[in-house]
Image (cartoon, rainbow, N blue to C red; front, side, top):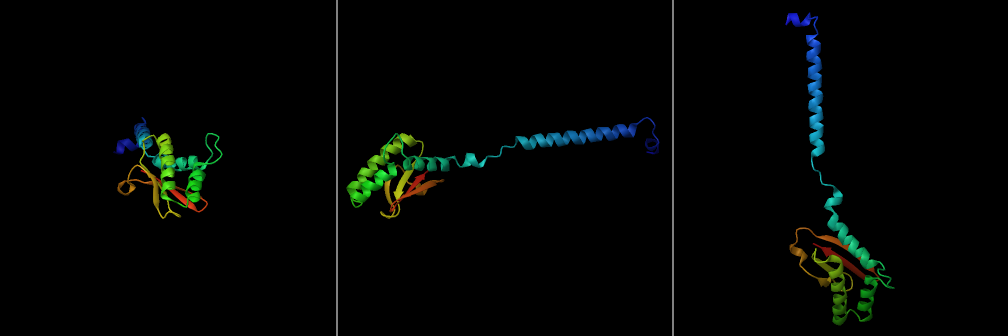
Length: 151
């Protein structure tokens, strides 16, 4: 050990340099491993939520040059017929056609009116009570409050 301290050939310097290169190499390997860890982003996890909001937005906007939105049309049908069963059937036909086009069977859905009809399901193709994950979008028009459940 005494010879290493008085070494004039640079053995200690060489060992110090090799140790620092080894430490630097280990830090770079650890950094690469951290970069490679797959961390799901929030935007990937909430794609279903975005889909439910997008569908409800389409229902609330004037699409294809129509004068009235789908929400306005179904609200008018319900209110002009005093929320009768025949008006609910007519609304169900309109909604079923809409969801067949826009959801294309990829999702199960339930479209509910919660204010005037006290939670009456206007259109549905499944039961969301047994679903693992349910995404909800809601819109109001006049006295009507609609909720779309996607699962």
